[in-house]
Length: 147
Image (cartoon, rainbow, N blue to C red):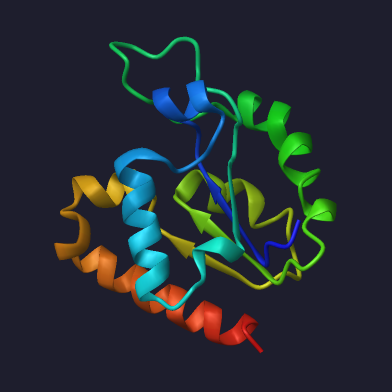
């Protein structure tokens, strides 16, 4: 695969789980907007999640953070993506779950950490100060790896 940036989120939402794709829907649109405004080519990104399937015990259709056991069970699936990304230059951790668990796994690769786009939507989306912080973080990150 020709992606140069791996973006790791938390867990799939309902529609993501059904379609088997990460970062679709409103949070995906916001992430695409953020990446584009930061100068990061979306087509050079590979999107995945810390856990690859939606939790079966969600209440009222709401998402929940994956448990450490669920994350441990999926680490091999996520790390197996790395060798397939032959042009990988860096990783973006979208949300605290991805940052907490994978920052230790991908030592040596340039990385950035941003608030998860779903959480960013709850904070006001593009009007949020977190959006501006993430925009600056991604600009700095991409400037480092683009050369």
